[in-house]
Image (cartoon, rainbow, N blue to C red; front, side, top):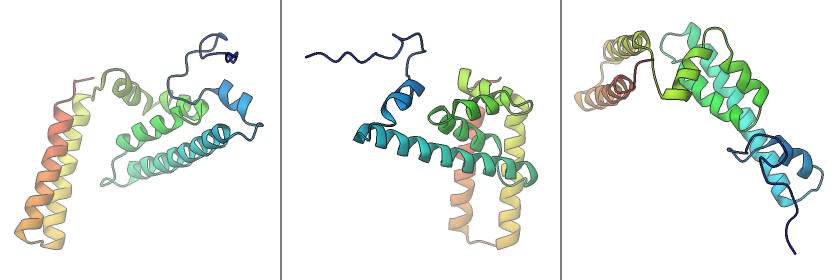
Length: 159
């Protein structure tokens, strides 16, 4: 006996690239099957995580130590798996949408953002050293982690 259920893309909907098509949720949601339950749980967890990361991203607008765009990139990835409406809202956002789309499409970061990240890391490191007077091992460890982050950012293509 063959499975007659429609495959992704056969019904005119775009292919299911992330494992969470709306068609799958609507057809399995009322069945009580383990796959449907697992899908609903995963979708709910991704939605909750996406909302949490969006909140952290918006906190970063007002607190210079907290990054904004990395949290929003992660939130968009969570919304891809849970809420196309919230994903679209982030990608179409007037201020953050272009940054998120550049990252998603090309893995690119604007040059100005790279320099802002380097400046923020430098400032954060100075505040860390000045405010806590850590020993040399901790100072070197924090400097190495921050340097790796800045190197990663500067090795990405320019947007």
